[in-house]
Image (cartoon, rainbow, N blue to C red; front, side):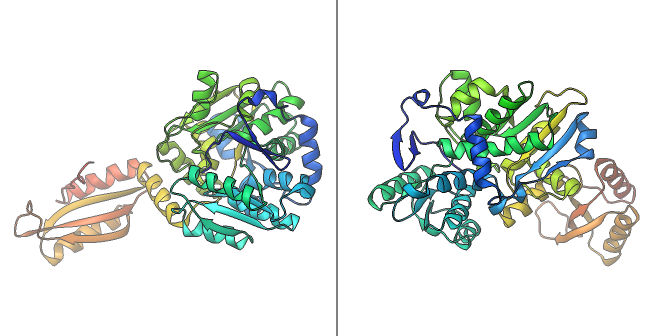
Length: 429
């Protein structure tokens, strides 16, 4: 999760971004220079055709898999271009960044490439997994701040007093140019691209890609996707200026940015055709679908473009060539378990049932036999006997089941009722 800041670090200086349009926009030539600089240093990620998503949508759908990038996301491109382009101008004590996720790891990897030390300020609440991943790439991690805004403030202060160069996650032309190399790769692999769908947080990624793609294929459309919980880009485009929005919790924390970047906004206004919103359930479904259908593990932000496609938030024409940017795969293992389970429940493939039975051994046996005949898989089974609403001679069996989908579940419940086991809904169902 990265949050906006009205300052820009350019060529080792901290600049005040009170008028972003006074700064030159990133050009195709700068993106092409970044591509040459990064060749052999970052991974040229694959563009993979998906028959499944093509059939679902009626378009020819391809996935640009930045999940396979170094450090697991696109962030290393921008960080590496920024650090390697400015190697002679970096602070004597290396680089510093503030991040709660992918930017931290991208900067750590890029600093290692350049042979300079990296310090990452992370909020105090950041997960142990993200701390350990950043440390593993060679960075020094300091926990400071109750919010990412506070962490950014600390990083900027440390940069000035500690002779370090602050690396902004998106509000930097060299970072934007590095992210734009994805657009070059897409068109090299699929020159007939008609539409590119990109997750939007601070806007550095989509502004770089839009600059590259629109410069080389003017007919192509660029659509941004944000979580409904944090519609900062959509709000800015509606207002005509970057605005700060209230952000709700979202599993797409990588795009939970309250204010679009000042450098990105003019580019988005000129080159991005549309920004759409997706809700939490659509993102959950997309993560699950990517994992099951393509064996691709994506974080919430990375799955947002597929969520937009499958929930019909993106307007497409039959047969056009659509590229979904799956921007990263760094999802916490414990969160992933909850996400997948939520997706299975929502799709009707996992269910919890409460079934009252007579408190005797043969009742349980008959219940289990009925479930077996219907082909249900029992994940968990429990029982309660002392609930106030239960007669003394009854107990309640609590089941978590795997089923094939809603029609299978409907048949299962009918079979249980016919066998004398009335299914009770859970509270709130």
